[in-house]
Image 1 (cartoon, rainbow, N blue to C red):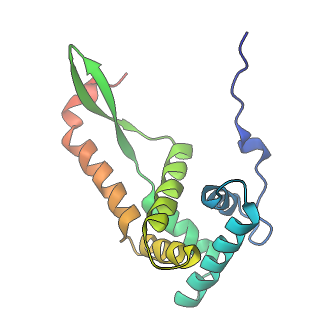
Image 2 (cartoon, rainbow, N blue to C red):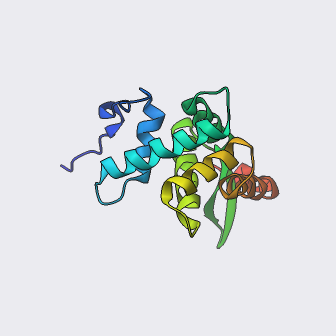
Length: 157
């Protein structure tokens, strides 16, 4: 009998400064090769920079709003029906919405060149907070794709 996958979300602890599960997930998304202290330093420096750019709000509130702005509501999945592939729009669960948003923000920040990672992450979170930037554009493209293929929604099962 094979071992079943067990989610590690039950073991995830809030980050030490903001006491936020979302911050822990972002830190884990930034982390490369198990170097968590480096990813924590990147995230906290980015939060400090966000705090300075947007006065009157806590950094964690800004990050939460930015992630919520990037969350996709629907996505397309490929279904093979009768010899042809269709892009079928399907709703996205809350956990996947958050995971995709974090992944898109971190990947967009990594894709920029010429600055330290904490500055790139801060810029991307600021853009996501203002509903602009490459991660927000990614969400918009996913929604447009689902909208254009809504005729195939009856193929979802």
